[in-house]
Length: 206
Image (cartoon, rainbow, N blue to C red; front, side, top):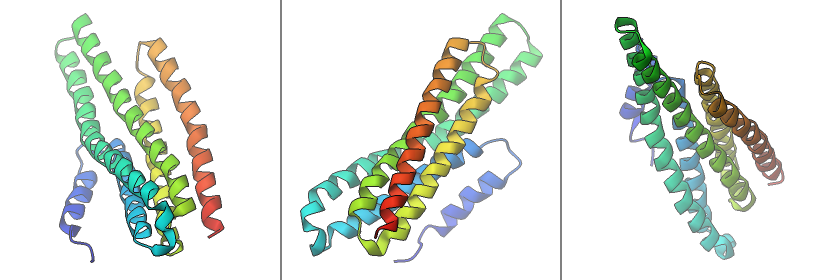
């Protein structure tokens, strides 16, 4: 019981607070999604132990396993996002020293990667939001606020990741990729809003 990792949490916050450009908002977005998945896992576990929810135990256990994989993926993306941004900074610095077509290509490759990582984060956070609907429906009433916090975190993670995608798309020369990414984001934005709305509607009924 209680928080046993406060020192690690503090270290992460200190990293975010540093004057270094990474980790930044993209990493924080992935972390928010990972925390959301973790909260939903907790609710699944607590609910599965309840005799009242015995019939839902197989579904809750499957949900918990899926959320575990989501959490691990988002934790990995938190680190990847910082690395992707560092590559953008490094490639731009290198281009200033040695400009030319090769340097331009290096910058474009870095920018594309810096857009792809938060795109994956946004997709992960959307999946967490979709999972939250099922947890909101079946989860024990005593943990409804935990589900609500998870929805808010996943929604923030999704929106933050989308912002990071778009800020990198604006400097990409590959317009086909940029248009495809924007279309995907718009579709996901609707799905994310719908899932959050459904989850909160279910929570209000508990």
